Length: 190
Figure 1 (cartoon, rainbow, N blue to C red):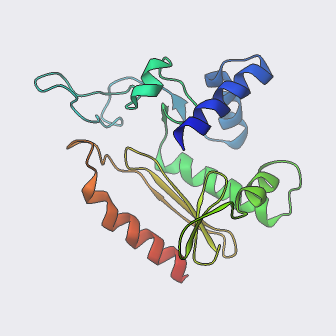
Figure 2: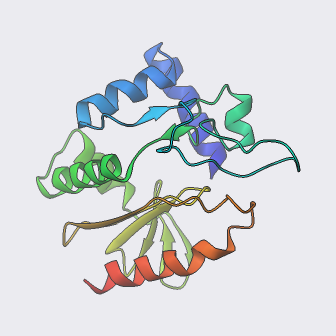
């Protein structure tokens, strides 16, 4: 899935003749997401360090965790963005509001199109465009590698945002699965 997002980022840059970080900044400003940026970001208490790739070396802090994004200068279509739970809540709210308003051109149209099942994953789960669709298509969610998750329930207008640092102890990320399962169960039941 990352390759598709990487290519999408490159295509947007080519089509708009602007760097991806500038396109992102313009979009986030329009949406009212004032704390969302591409890295690198300053090492502060608000920025969680990720994993320690080489024993004895400092942890990665404020830079893209993903190797492919790092090779692309930290700005890629699939990784390298730093945000806050508040900004992600703004994003979720804007997506759901646009979807509910019947917005036929912008975010609502994109969300509606992205919620159409494209390929089955397993019984009860399908892949949409950018989303995994669950609960008979009533819930859409997307997981980020480092532990972020966004769950949307367009019919009810509810959402769940998870911001964790699941790679702090290494790439295994085994401890995040129960939290993600609980989030899916919770939003599917409402």
